[in-house]
Length: 303
Image (cartoon, rainbow, N blue to C red; front, side):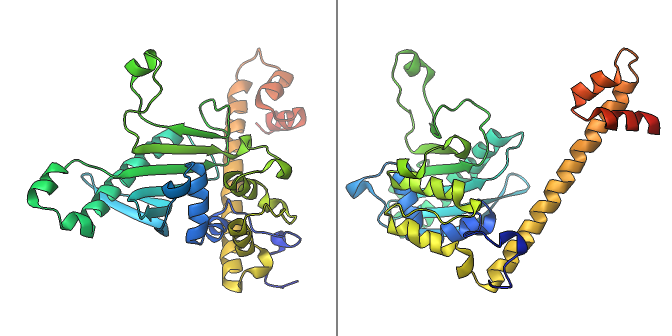
């Protein structure tokens, strides 16, 4: 085996496509992004994406009033003037929904800016430009989440949009602004077996969920997915990519260790506070804190 392969990856077939490097390698082609987006937006025939431009780690800066910046995992512009961003989210956090809204706001402004820079817009008359002053392009945010969402999702894919409460009360389930979409994917809820995978979206999600497990993945009959799997196959990666991946793994480990340590310290602070309550026995404190009774007794002895 190649000696440059990090120890933790030995015996595995692919790098984890949910990591930053793995995600970029998996979708490092127009065909891959088109195949995934066409599928998740249910685009068929002439409605399918004909062409697109894409970039990773797209930084967007605005003055509002001081400078603010967001970095999109993957940003794409289609030939039909759709603006998309695809985010791979590995961990939940307290303001997840706020973040989706904030990123979409930046995406809308960037889309508007890009639209007005286009050759098509520049050829418009002054009157036409004025007429289209507030027009914004179609923007689609796709969030692939490796955690349970803070709201109840029955399926593994959900779509958010702007709806009229009055229309909903009348039984009309129709967005009032179809150019604004959020596609939310919950990987933990994707539980299809390989035999149950029948379309491109499920093939991509199966890869995202299972590629890190170690074994070779099945052939789903999708040449674009197969090419993507080759890009994340460990034996096909160059030394530079493997070195970057090892650094990413070490950084992730360090963060996880610090978080674990912080959680333990917080729990011990809670234990110390409970010691002040004479009504709580060591057994009670152990049950509440989920720290072993031996550890509780040891902690009390150290006080």
